[in-house]
Image 1: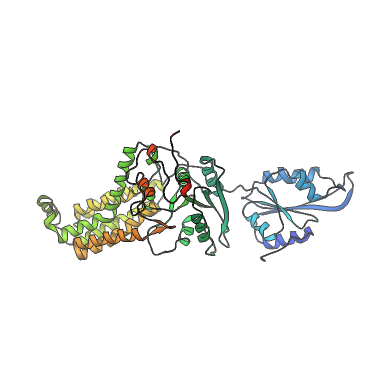
Image 2: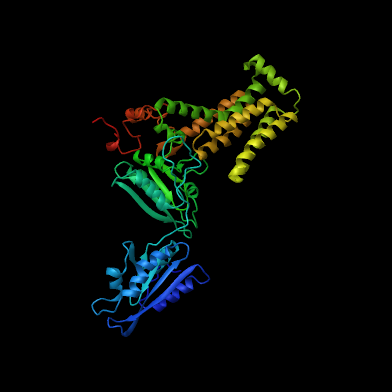
Length: 501
């Protein structure tokens, strides 16, 4: 297809072009309607309209009621009004109809679910918004559950995603900048932010990164996320992903930017920090002592998920003197009948649990839960009885797996699952020193990462009045009445968000 193709005034040429482009596409619905009556019912010079849409993507009943029936039943030739003017002025009974003179854009609109109407003696076409795409209904989030708060979640429709956010933020300054990405997929995306809260530099940087690459297709927000990362080799995500509209709306009100993609039930939030990745919606719906305790549990769980197996190896292999005598005797007794070294035991069980986790994800939900629980119990018990692993290793690996599930962001949690193997290897070679060096390296990497200019460990690694206020919503989540200021990435003149009347 040419980059720029004009629409011909001869409707027969347009019909031929459409049929040539969509040759072999049996889901195309196209029909030319002849209109050759004048106001006296007599035949005159032939006029017609040509209607084109894709079956399954379009609301055909809407097309018939807004265009086909009004034009074919009521229009009569009038010397004071040609057919195009008659359709645009009063026959076309829809507010969402636009004129387009680029043939290529008209065809892409058809592929998105719109309807194209070509008119005799007109060098442009009408594009009627008639999308009726096959999407899931609004359901409860299966990946970000909670005890309190709304139960709705995003689905694969970008318009549903933007509507769920607009339902929560009724502000005229909420902007929705829409575009397309992917030369072949033409995936729609929407950048949402509040104009006077989000930094202009942040908004411009997000737009620049989206437009930085040309790619054939984008099928999910995760693919776009990888393209927008500057340093692809760093494992930690610089975007926060969520399926919950209330979390996305709260991020926008904090001065952040939300990016929604068509065909993806998750939106991206920028910037992201460790603090935001450990937060959940429940933190703001529950009492502040319970929310603070839950956050502490998550931070401890992150340390257990990445460090417990390596710490166990370091102590049992190199530093047995720090283990209490009774516990050391119990470990020695459990290992008396084993032939594998401790490191190999831990690796076997960790890989086994990762295998069970992956199998549980791929299997249907009814079978996945059963396989995960029953498989873990049976295989773990059998491994102990067969003398492959000890009971203490099973306990350590099970605690590590449970702790990894306590991290609320799945992408962030998967990084800790990967890093624990580096901790295991370092502890196996250098004991407690290797374990501590791995922890220091982890802190160094986290401190060196930034997300759109915001330090990844903010507000812990920065100082200043805004960051001191940010610590009120860090590990300690103070009452809502104390959270008076937005985070430091919002515009300074709109930093205050709460004041007493």
